[in-house]
Image (tube, rainbow, N blue to C red; front, side):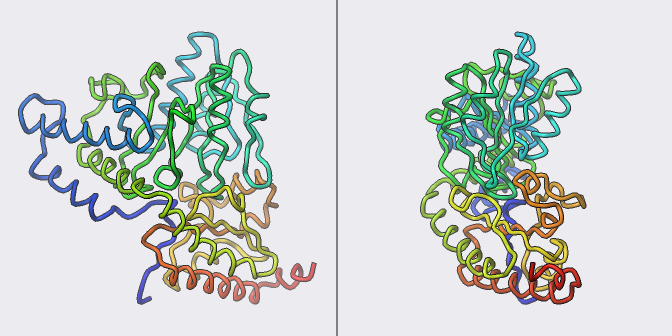
Amino acid sequence: MEKIIYADNAATTPVHPLVLQEMLPFFTESYGNASTVYSVGRNNKAAVEKAREQVAKAIGAQTNEIYFTAGGSESDNWAVKGIAKRMAEKGKKHLITTVIEHHAILHTMHALEKDGFEVTYLPVDEYGLVTPNQVEQAIRPDTALVSIMYANNEIGTIEPISEIGEICKKYEVIFHTDAVQAVGSVEIDVVSQNIDLLSMSGHKFGAPKGIGALYIKRGVNPINLIDGGAQEKNRRAGTENVPGIVGIGKAIELATADISNKANKLEKMRDIIIEKVLTLPKSRLNGHPEKRLPGNANFCFEGVEGEGILLKLDYMGICAASGSACTSASLDASHVLLAIGVPIEIAHGSLRISLSENNTEEEAHYIGEKIFEVVTQLRNMSPLWEEIKDI
């Protein structure tokens, strides 16, 4: 392989060179603890607060509404468990989510069910969409929280977040969105969209792994997930990860600087791949054809296994995914694909391509051609394909 074409940006992104440049001094020269009073610490505290301002500005929040975490999973756990337990004090123990959430939400909900909470899991349509009406119909007097992802990590479908936020505001129900895949890809304004809590993870948009943030609207008060010291205004204990915090601040500033032009570039490359791949017989695009992340293309192919496609693409220098990176060790079919009605035998033949600005149109053409070639090769080797190709 002369060149690697990386097309799994939904799993993680490379650290942006300007982000790394911004972070480097905080590993060596400015190594102080940001919670100390001497100058080395105070300088780092200033860097942390600058990053807090950068994150807040990117999503339309106030600076004092941003709390740094270790990533998306922690942010999700804190938002859901923290609000659930806080609202339980008021007798509200009902939660609403969807069946296609990331496991950081679903497994958190399952844990709360064991603690006596009741969870409504809303179904989605064939494109992975939940409707505002479904949310409204599910809200009860004892509903504590609605948690619905901004954009799905597998199929890329973007949910009607503004409309759902408006309904939650109408019924005075707290609204959380897992925006891990959306931040840096679509424009977000937590105020106009009536979002009360929002989770993000830096490594999805050019920051390093191990740093995330949770937006908590002023007046919303989840119980702490991590107890200890007084960091993050007494809400999230632990010595500040100054290099990571500096990194997520710079990364989100870069990622949101020109979202519309970036989206146009990604959509063009994405559609090059989709157009070529869908010329294959018995192939399908998963997710909404229009309301989807600009860099996401998710397919299913009858008669082949996703793992086989990935291995052959890897041999050709293409890094892609079959389902979510967080479930890559699992042999189970994607819960997202099953939820949108894909038969289990077809769901096993899924492929996710997720692009970034680092990709080119030339690479998009290459990816489309190689997917076509690989799927055709695998089908020609499969007795199963002979049985189903003319059905």
